[in-house]
Image 1 (cartoon, rainbow, N blue to C red):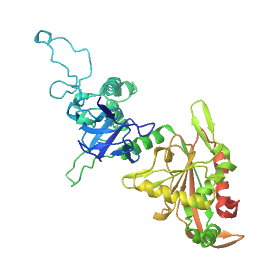
Image 2 (image 1 turned 120 degrees about the vertical axis):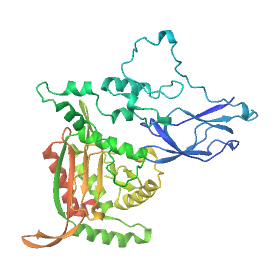
Image 3 (image 1 turned 30 degrees about the vertical axis):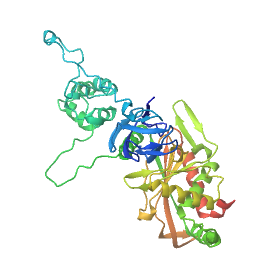
Length: 424
């Protein structure tokens, strides 16, 4: 009996993905554990393994196809002894038949015009149609980003509000121009071509996810920002001494490795900040799992150093080197970048003096690290020159009070300026 190979869910939140590349072709014999394809999720490109044995009878979805829904049959395997030419063919699509002429004048039940492809097939998913009706979006005027131009939920989320909904949201006493202003304020700006040379670059799944999550974070999470300056000289000295001692083991610490440890230690010292807002409850974590921002081609990913509070700085350095390398190759497993109790983002290597990072929901804080630079600084009671770094903590004010956030920043500063405490 032919076996249908379905688009897998490679992470708990995955709903669709891009079938980047087939690693087999029709007629190939595969065994359990053989690699079948490379699939791009919203965070990484992952390899998909065969579970069953047999011959690839039919590839249903060509490589390079975007928006393949989880559960879609992407290939068919014929079992041993089965004629691969008899493997199950794709099921015919259900098409909307044209209404008889006698009923042509009947009123339409659906108030939302829905664009159709040749043959009358609906080009919008049921969820997209329902959301469009709720938001007053005209589907007939839209071009979908799903397979074969199908309109999906993401297209509705990014669409302009319909005139009816916009008018309903406008104050009764507002001037006549208010509805149009409301549309401009609430909807993303429509692309406009003013004659400047440009290239239209299709967004990757990762970039779409980044856009969605950052918008969600800034719209739903009330951020509070706290900044402190700290002296780096003692930490830089300790790093040099540790690297000299660990060189025989092939371990080299970066400043970032020590800052990961400092943040983890600070969260243990101020557990009120090692939390997560969850509606009517607050999740309080007993360990510090630090998500570390890593820039990769096309976006950003945050591999996690689990239990950073109990790991030595050498172990953190080794782990981060491996995670960062695999992140840039798109080879991280979902459990290696999903989760975390707090985040750290370091832009000091770019010479950025200070910045405020956007919280990564559902986490409640992220530490933004600026560049260490020589500045006038009070050392003891005298003005001197020291290597100083600015760090800004972004906190979810629903979960973290300003005073607790300030205590965390003080603890972080103490560990950075007296780094021997990180080795305890």
